[in-house]
Length: 507
Image 1: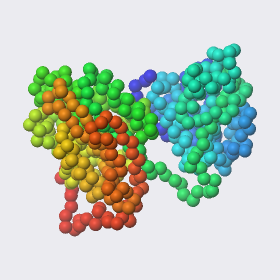
Image 2 (image 1 turned 60 degrees about the vertical axis):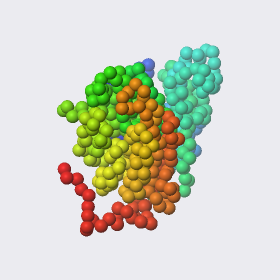
Image 3 (image 1 turned 30 degrees about the horizontal axis):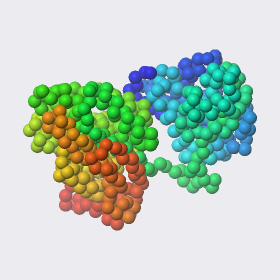
Image 4 (image 1 turned 90 degrees about the vertical axis):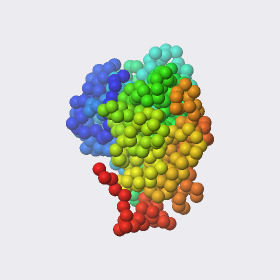
């Protein structure tokens, strides 16, 4: 599996053809000359450009999903690949049809294991919903069937794969992505020896399908947040931390979360090896892990198709000790944020300095802000972010006592109300007896909302169980914020007396 720095999912362009061809040849080594010719791709892009997708890794096309729109009544359950594609002319494409039919999907072998296929399938589902189609259908190969074809029928093979008694890389993947088997078809694709020319007609139903014509093009407004309430525990090395972190990323990604939020200084257990040093030297040793953590979390963001907010960790910049974190986006890119306000204890014990970077971050779910713990207790900072269009404010924190947590909680609630945004907070729980100055922690992850009729009356969307390791999965609707901004009972942002006062950055 190749190491990837940046992933992009976009529509196919004709300039991609040569790379598309190379990746397809690598993906189907057993099927000689079974790749799309350039005139085929040109025709698809002419007929249905929105249905042709590619995954680009570090500028290279490494996967694709190609589709047509076909009316369900025109899909013969005993069709062949040649028939469904109109003998490769794509004359079967019907813009007025109601089924998105997948004619190909593949990932270059060197880029498998990054869950790129799942991205393509998810994008197909989103396209199906946007186009208000009834569902998705395709005939999937069963490449491992040839290994047992002399022992069981295709129907028995499918059942054994479903029960995980046998493994088929294609069929197992399709089943795990909510597709169900509709029919086994014979002589589907000539030359597919590994499948014995059998294929499985698969189907996914669009639960949002409305047979009535839509007057507007619906847009996804709900963003799913995955908050990780992290248990401080002894960890033997960096790999053990990655293993624990991946467990939670896998969990919240499994619920299709758009973001995973880790707490402030969640890497602190690694400081146990340096407990023989004074606190200031020990935390500077911990700072050496910042870059490896960023790189690994970038890999996780790509692999699990989720935006990860890495909480925070110590970071040395030109000899200056900062408290920073990284926004690792699911496209593989990353950006750093810094803690602006440093607590008296962080200064006196560690010699930590405050950063000077105040900015929002553009994501595929809108503009977000990230401030670290003590920062949320200063209303000017989130207000500057709100003026830049922030819709969700993420606050990784670390508090040792309930007093400290209360400050973070109530200030976060205030920021949600005054800035007409959602605020998500996540902290560490438990204790670290072998790490000085990090003995105990108290936390309760939560998502706070503005206070108006469209939101919970107490301004609390959801809260985790206090001081228990767990995740909190929460949906927030950003469209409600726009409605609040224009038509709320009060309009906090609009009603500011900027003729009398204002908050602005000095640099």
